[in-house]
Length: 109
Ligand SMILES: [Zn+2]
Image (cartoon, rainbow, N blue to C red):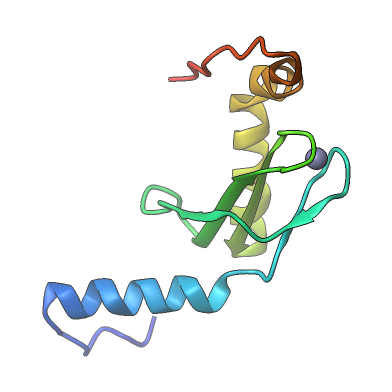
């Protein structure tokens, strides 16, 4: 999208991509389960996700729930959220179970 002329080295391209992702990084994520806001989260690989510019995910420090945020085209974000909710249907329960120590590894793929 307007960047086709730039042919830097791979290092430069990676740096550009990282800068772009950092620019999209929200200040904080808010847990959907308990509304705790936290700033300790990571950017996620979105290369396979069409229309998604950046994605961030972390674990709520209060309840351990997985919290995700997607940035990109509205339709793509909606699709990504639905896909994640489908994929994580069981992990959401695992997240709450892990509070009393019964953590079961997520095996969605
Ligand atoms: Zn929480």
